[in-house]
Length: 601
Image 1 (cartoon, rainbow, N blue to C red):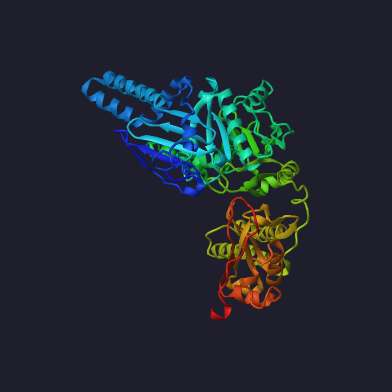
Image 2 (image 1 turned 90 degrees about the vertical axis):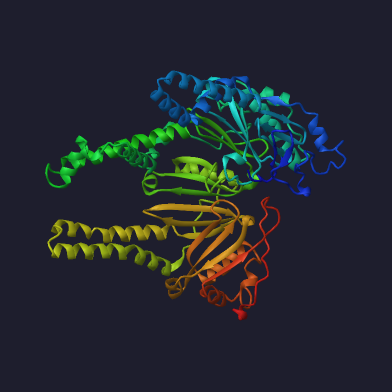
């Protein structure tokens, strides 16, 4: 397992000896290989000694009903092998019984060998039988405590608690998970961990006591099955059933259909010989007319839509966005599997609002957080699912504490950007028309198909115009706002905190140099790691970069910030980058590293 920015890991061999898996630096206060925390030089009176006073606790015994089911899923291949081996010798029942008993024993051992404890300094998890593993997280490094309850957990009144440190975990094994506690225990422990972290960041505000947290848990709990402390403020966003009208416009349901077809074909079932599919193939060949083809297309659309709506209901049902008392953001959602996810607000460096063309036509959008410490650019970072655009923008403005950041007009990128949109969109359309015209001349396609292809030209022109209208940038308070279009009518608008910008990247292709424009990318440690302003003029790029983060690009310009033409010449050589020092906490302003003289290029 890898280091999780504050999570220490120890492994203990079967003879009781401990081996350090990750040895942390002394100035971080992390646990080291001998079991003592750095700073406890004498082994008494330090944080490690106070941690040793805390008792070890076991997970809820109700997990004895859940672990066997989980172990059956993990050992399914072995059980199948046992059944196949037993069928040949006539001892199938004996093999199946032995495999079932082994699964139950493994589940019992998993519960018996897993303990945890919470001290004033650390939260620790100890598990394993032959290979003991101890994971620890300092309380002042706790940045998120997420609650998850699957169907089996909800039936038994259990909740899985996951502790995050704000560092991007590479896998689920890099997270400290308590699977599982009772609902009340998970809620109280969550309040204790987050309260300790908030107290470390703001000593003037005392952490909430367990008694006050326990009093806050009641039947009015908005999370329902998980059970969480009700925030004092009204929700920033709450999903309503009417939002489901935006869910059919996703490709995930159709991907499931394709995967299902592939699975059936791998199982030896040739779907091409099924009745409906055979009718479609015959219709395409002109055997039965266009009727079966139309019916098949409608059937695929209906099935894909139903799958998309079902997935949205299962994942986003009762989606709620809150700002907790300590300032952290919290989302709760799910129908069968419910989740409560906490996102530390100081790690949120902006928001991203996007919408595909069908969702845009219905007046919808969705919102993601641009945050550090998430696995992937969008993992655990959704702030608002697809919903009405006005409500999504309002919620995003509330998250930014800047209601007007995403509603103001953008600075357009000029005539050169518009020409490039028309050229890049229309030349494939014109090529398609020419190819179909040549095929019609040879008699391979009917005249109607060639004439219909001419509609691609006005459609491409409308698409190019739409992409240009979505293109632009502006500075709104402490945020850099970037807009651009992508794909077939999709739009994105990003509000990125200026203090979160750690560098600039300038790129110019051959055609961009001829048009006098460039692509300016604001690099950051959060989200997609870089947000580009496409086809912006050289002078405007320099002005914007200096106004957004003063002094970051200046060392990379020839003759100072005022000579934009010189900056364009530097960028025209291929690529120019200005990189500052990244600070995850967002404190301080980035500083540019010294640049080599341009004359030496």
